[in-house]
Length: 297
Image 1: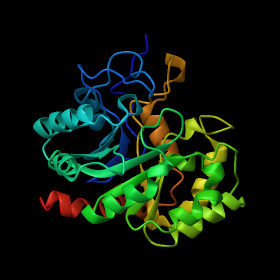
Image 2: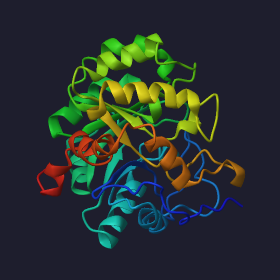
Image 3: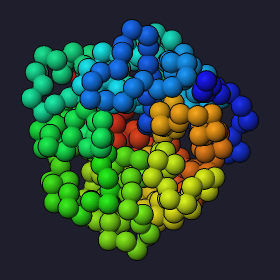
Image 4: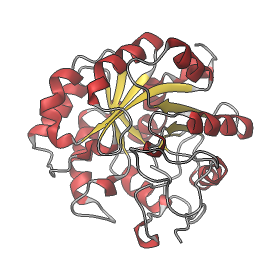
């Protein structure tokens, strides 16, 4: 059975105070997987209590919990996980929900009270809300001051660029862009991404390089090359996440060492100043954390 290590070797370079992990999923008993999505993660259910041990291990102070595809548009598990985190570690966790563009205002308000501060577009197999909802979800987010997490096959980013360029909310391109076609820093897809970043409301998420790397670990040289290029182009637009509990890992051999992969990915940032931006000030701006930490809604 898959066993997730919850502690281990310390990071080579400690995280700065206030570090934010912007990509996790958490699960609690009583919330089964729904039709249309993948099954729940393998092994023991990865709970908020387990993640808190990972926080202590890696030195993470704050976390963004993203709605898992297994639960599609039913965000009740996410709300329960955020409640659990709020009880155990107050004011350290917020969530990104999956909602359709026609969600009722009263439901969105309930989510906001439950510490939801972002919405998710996931246009890959099993995703709960696809790109057909982009404009409507963007409008909802912009009105409320939420952000939007957008994930699709980045191979097609040029096709989607005109729509993405019109987004009004703060948004992040997930998972190193998931360029399944394989790209280099000189590829037109990276030029498209730079244009979007230069508009001022787009961020780029360092997380889960193993999900789209063709060269593989431990260095993920292909992902490293264009990620370094983006980080050099716009250090103020990089954010980072653990991608815990690594939902695609089915066998123990596939499960990454959280400390090792964190050291690897954060090593793609040029210096301590760039790391502080990616881990503290950039996620604070993307998610509007100063506003939410002050209790403003």
